Amino acid sequence: MENTNHKLTWKIAKILWIIVIAIFSLLAVALCTAPKNKKENATLEKKTLPENATTQEKVEFYATLSKPHSDLKTFKINNDILHLYLKASTISEDFILKTAASDHAFILKNIFENIPEINSIIFWYETEFIDTKGNESTETAFRMTFSRENAKNINYENYKVKCTLDYNNMLIVADNYYIHPAIKKNLKNINLK
Image (cartoon, rainbow, N blue to C red):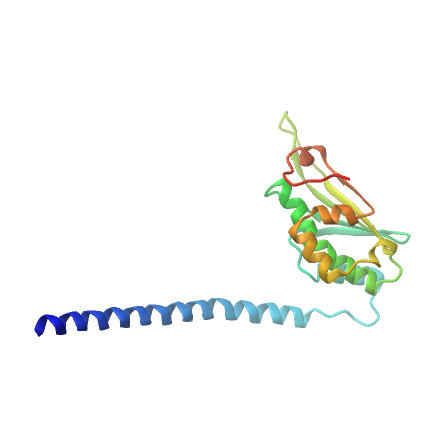
């Protein structure tokens, strides 16, 4: 009888330990995610555009609103063409295009919907290259152009998902694009048009 009580006590102790570990795990997850979400919501709530914003202020606002993986370095507007210069990721050649694919749709949509004086956007993704002699230079890794005319037929909700799953969709839809030869030769999933 004593042996049976001992086994029963041991089983209850194991079950209690599993419950305690599960509770602590849930608390840890809740504590780790709650402040982050509050911080993100606070940042989005604070970021607003003044009513009398200039075209320059509108571009900066809408180009950085999505917090893209590629940092906006600078931009310039020539006539009705917006040139966005972004720092390309250096993780891998594929990641440069994957980052562009996931970020550009949000920027396109917001700029074309909110800044009527812009009729074309050129995304310039720049990164550091090192030649065979060890010399470093900043060059365009990837560039793509979208016209307002082309972008007006995009269903952004579906398009962003398609591009994120396969960056070739972005290349097909873009008016034109350029991929640096050093980047192009190492791309794994590219279907060039």
